[in-house]
Length: 236
Length: 236
Image (cartoon, rainbow over all chains, first blue to last red; front, side, top):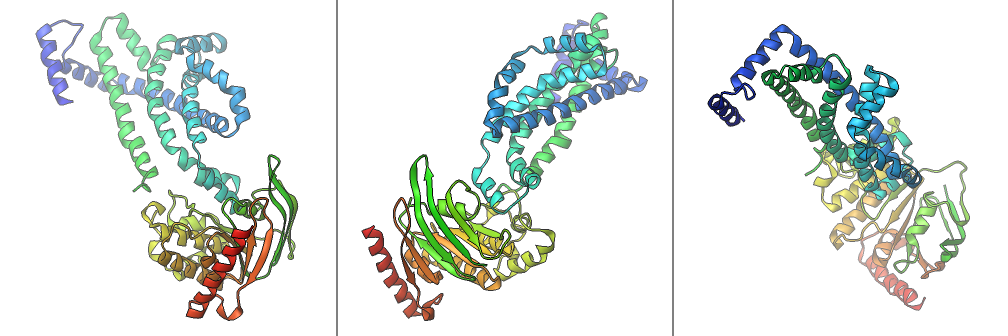
């Protein structure tokens, strides 16, 4: 990682073109924007949208995936809709949501969630289809109730699929949030990048991009990885 | 509690599996069902355990109400992501937790209470499955080939654990097996089943003095029973 920054710095200094600013300039820009408060504020706004869209799409996608994996009838009824949604370009969903529901926060978050939901559902459906029937039979024979069965028997088997969906979900969602912000919001990282794009200010664009990558990486290290370790600690 | 089983007919897609199968099970009695493999033993257990309701006949309990049934499956069927103790606790109402701990101590499982099942040997995992079935203070315990794929010494130890649990809790036991020696070592009575469509072809009473004893004469009886059961299985 450090090597990459050194290389970047050297090449940029050698080229000397404002369209490829050296790493040090970008770091200075990050410091300046942080000091002014603009960077933390826009990061926080974008993060809030990412979290809301992420939670919405994970909860709905998981419920849908479980239902489709467990009940054949639901699967048959919704399968082609899922394929349609999977193949609908993100841009189309975003534009339609803004046109139908107005340029507001709800439309923005719904558009992002709708883009991620089908792939979560497909992943979780695979997990639900692979559920261990023997363990379910055991749970029923001991008279376990529906919610304890979901919590202790079903979900632990789905966790690996949920983590896979969460990983790819986080990556896709933050990319789409930026597009949504660029198209119809007046704040957030995506909006800022649009401003810098109009000014041809590559330093500013990279400053915001780097900061955001750092935040997403932190979430992966501090949240997803420990959670996954906890969920799989029973494995030998 | 005692049990009357009267199954007139149980079929899968017009193929009869059980036909005219009748027997009784007394309070605190241990009855073994032996029969050729594929004769419908597991199906019969599912019907008695309430997991299969699609049959023609009656399963009647002398004490009204629904009896608690603990099932010990062919495989241990423990939840791998829950500890030994949690596996017991999950199928129990809270007031029964102290009794479960007591049972774990009695069966020599207490030192392993915080282990996850994948770290246990098969013999140990089966012992936990036995503890779980008895922990719910069952009126009836069902066992489906519980000692297959264990070496003779391990099978003997599992039988001892089963009998220890049975002495702790006043309960009836119904086990299906195709191992006459194992049946003779445990049961008061042995019922011999015919091939499909299965019914009870004969009943062998284990002499009272030789029941559940590892005295040489008891082993002799077991060997004799093996011959008798073998003859019946060969004839039918």
